[in-house]
Image (cartoon, rainbow, N blue to C red; front, top):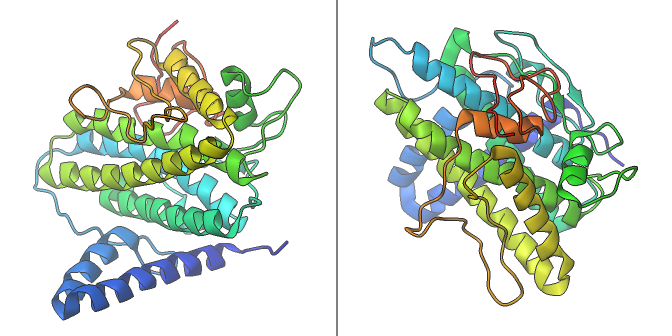
Length: 326
C-alpha cells in the first residue's frame, strides 16, 4: 500500500482545483473562468499549505460573537477534513493547517481506506473540499482561529467509530467497526458525519451577525449538503442491492436522534420502494441542530458534557458544552 505525505495531499487538493478551473475555462469562457478562479482562490488556498486569504472583508464592528461561531464550525471541519484525508490518502492535514489558539491535539486512528476506484474519487473530492473549508475558516478568523483539537477517527476497540456503531446497534459488545475497511463502512461513517455538518451550519445561521460571514457559511452549508446528498445516494444504491443497508442507516439515524434529544428530526434514506435522499421537514427545508445538540453527537453522549467520542479532549473555542438531553 502506498504511503502519502502531507505535501502529496496538498498537491492532490491543488490538482483537484486545477480540474475545476479547466472546467470553468471550457464551460464559460474567459469571463467565467476569471470569476470562478477568484472564488476558488478565496475558498481553497494555494498548493504550498499556506492559509488562503478570504475574499470577504468585514466592517469595523465587533466580530467576537461571529468568530466564536466560526471557530465552532472549524472544529467540525477539522474532524471531517482529517477523516476524508486519511481515508483518501492515508495521511492528514499539514501542520500549517492545524495550529492556532488553544491546545493542539493529534489524530488517532486515521488510515487509508480500502475503497473501489469510484468511491476513492469521491473521497478525494470531498477531502479537497473539507481541507479548503479549514483553510478558508482559518484565514477568515485570522489570529483568533483555534488549533485543531484532539480527534479520534479510529475503528479499533478504542475508536470513536466503533463506539458510535456500538451505540447504534450496528455491532455488538466486543466487536469493532472499521470505517476504512470497505466502501459500505466508509459510506456509513461518512453518513454519520455529513448530516450533522449540514444541520450544524443550518442551526448556526441565525447566530451570525455579519453579512459576509453569513454568506460564507451559506456557501459551506451548500457544499456540505452536496456531500451529504452524494453519500446518501450511494448508500441508497447499495441498499437496493443489499437490503440490510437501509436498516443500518436507520440505526445510525436513530442513534443521532437519541443523542440530540427531542424532537425526532433525523431521517434515514428510505427503503427499497421509496427513497429519502434529502432529509427535510414538511416544507422541504433541512432541519437545524443547536451547537449543544451537535456536540451531543460528536461527543457520543446525551448528557451535558465537555468531551468524548470524536473529540476525546473536547473542542477548542468558547462553545464546547453539549446539551443535556438525558
